Image (cartoon, rainbow, N blue to C red; front, side):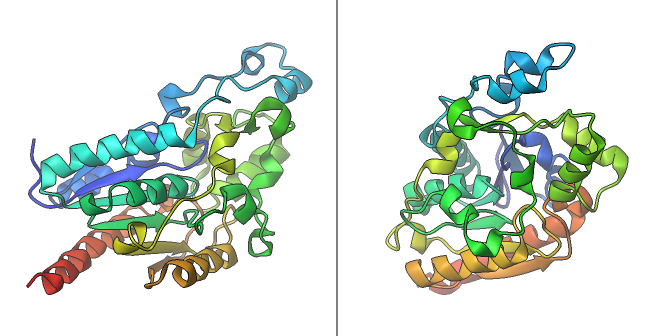
Length: 295
């Protein structure tokens, strides 16, 4: 298989898996692109649930206390998994690769852009964590611009004790399910929400939240970067998105090109056509910029 245009490498966010992109990939493919996805280490088919999750009757206290089987997953493992996929994508497209990261996946795509900037046409953050050098995701999450985020209210147990940030996506508690929907999927139907929640894994290793961002002007800074702002987002509020964009632009130099959607945190479910159009437009813009720079 070879791509006639670019290859999009689509990286899911925390608690999600490759199925996040199931509505987007067919649209990109219909426009002549190749779209590659994966389950990151510790996610999707690679996630191991705590034993207490499956016990009946369910014991909330045991679930909140059991150490995470995913606790040993490192950010470097995730970075290298995506580097390998980017290299595969580059072999299909003469180096025309656009790397896209959603939410916590932003930490991974930043690390990948630092490692293989020469393989990327652009890096795109979909309401993603865009964090300056030396800062971990957790520190950014604690910034006042993200203080209205609902997602931390979903967390179960002590992350330090269990080695992971844990949610209970299968909870039957109506208040908890309402909070889950409001955090991630406020603008999708109830049936779509039920399906999306069924795909979530419960544990995200602390390593991803604690690993400092490592991006430099000399490598990461050479990759054109784009940010898709989601105005109704309650997981990463718009104020936080804009703060991250401004902070990294000031630290790295250059300017992040922004795009805006009137959506919740997960527009790949609620607005897949709109997301796909933005990604295709980014490809066109990136090609034009590349041509302008070529003598």
